[in-house]
Length: 117
Image (cartoon, rainbow, N blue to C red; front, top):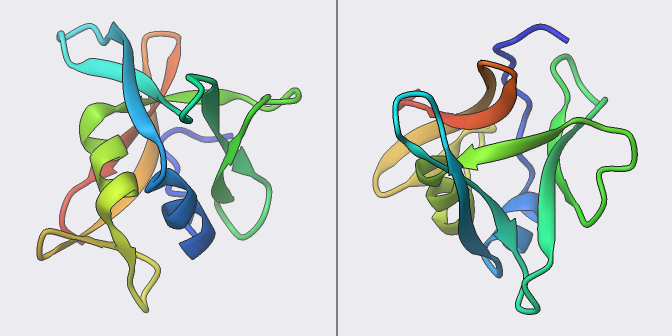
């Protein structure tokens, strides 16, 4: 897998993420908050990339099952939880269009907002 990568988001991902809460778990090297989405019971829902499409598709899984799990920047979690899928596959959030891209912070796989597309 090449990093950065821009897997696509689906309407199902956004609908599922809207029901979840962000839980901070760590900080990146610059001090920005990283975390996971959790359900009402507190169980983490891991953000993973399914091998579909040119760069894959973001999905949530209760167990990563051998797939790499990505920690979310809080801004990415906010876009996933509050955004709507646009016709072009980007995520509409507060009047701007975004995508979520994978990145590396040291050895930590992260998902961050790729700014207004």
